Length: 38
Image 1 (cartoon, rainbow, N blue to C red):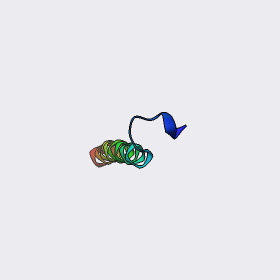
Image 2: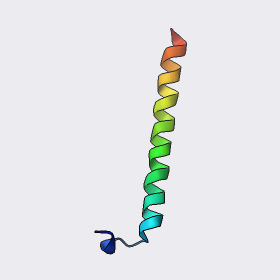
Image 3: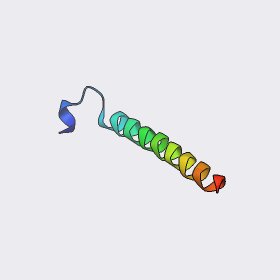
């Protein structure tokens, strides 16, 4: 399936990994802010 990608597979994977990290970062911040308000 990677053959259809406009970018190299490893670059694509890096982008997904970076987005995952951003998402986890935001989720972590939200969880921390909720627990610190108690």
